Structure formats: structure tokens, C-alpha cells
Image (cartoon, rainbow, N blue to C red):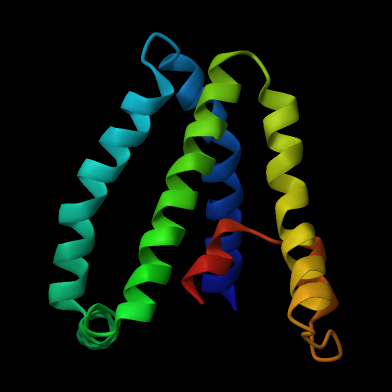
Length: 139
């Protein structure tokens, strides 16, 4: 429990301080920042996939399936666009607006899952709607 609370606090701190970091980099274009993020993430992800056996297994399965690989490619492009917009917005001085978008994003995702994919909200923990953090992506 303590470890989970520390992860949540750490996630909020990191997520909350990112706009300050991007603001320090306002002299660099958003596309260049995102390109650096991608280029530095690839070797780190490759290392993690090589070391963590379950990740390696899932990665190999995904790469051998054209449909999953196309979904991964599409999601990668959407994430790059998302982060580019985030960095661009902060560098243009729209930090509050960008932050509001990130706050509303999980709520819109839940609504889209419910409306478009007919997912059930019966088993959805109510606290997850209130306290959505970047840690959610690791589950």
C-alpha cells in the first residue's frame, strides 16, 4: 500500500512539474523535443524489453501480428501528436489550458469506452475516475 501511495504521489509530482520543464525549453521547437523523447525512449525501451521477460514475450507476439503492429504504430503516432501539442501549448503560454485537457482526457476516454465500445461501468472503481494518474498506463 505504501509503495502504491508513493507511486501516485511521484506520478502527480512528475506530471505536475513537466510543464515547468517544457517552459525552460521554450527556445526549442516542440517537434524537436518530441523527436528527442522518441529517440531516447527507443533504446531504453529496447533495454527494458530485453531484460523483462514478460515484456519481451508480449513484444515478440505484437511484432509477429500485423494487426497488433498496425495498432501499435497508430497509437505511437497519436502519442507523438499528443505530446507535440502538449509541449507546443506550454511553450506558447497555454499551460492552464493544456493541463485542463490532460485532466479531462481520462474522463473522455471512459465516456468513449462506454459509448463507443459498450464497456460496462459496473465494475469500474469510482476512485479511478477521480484520481487518474500517469501510473495507470503501467497496469
